[in-house]
Image (cartoon, rainbow, N blue to C red; front, side):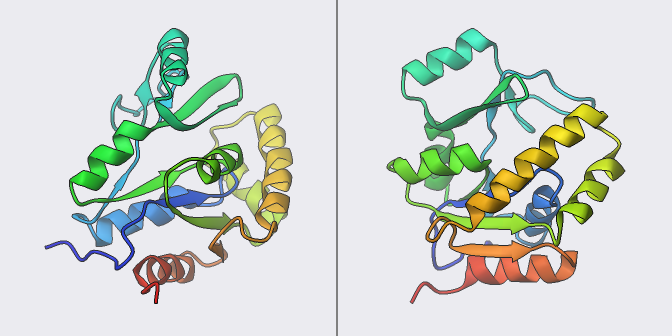
Length: 194
């Protein structure tokens, strides 16, 4: 039986690449398997080894992506690293109607767009303890070349600066200790909005 939080609005989780967003929300899914779902984004990039269409992303052509933009099918969309990413309005509506609390893993530009949209959501920013720790995590993944790491780090500086804008995020969690950060995320999601 699903234990639903009192506030059922979608939860937008953002933060720099490599900060541990996926690790945190995957733990939330494991602890509450019938409650949450991840909004699967659309992307024009090719799948990485081990990724599955419809699970990790909906992999679409640039033409299909642009058709969705033209038909106002996205609540947010952005370009990063030469690829496009977008969150479909229909995906959020379908999962919410099934009784799920939708989690969205969104980058900074997407947060700005969702804030301008008709979607009522809660906003959580996951921050690294420092840029040095973030760099070590990115290097530790072994999936990025040097140019990509530098691009992600310079992007992280902008995202961290944006996260300090008053009223943008409802909660900022520093992921220094994974267990502590998870407890903070879970407590925030389940707290009453009274």
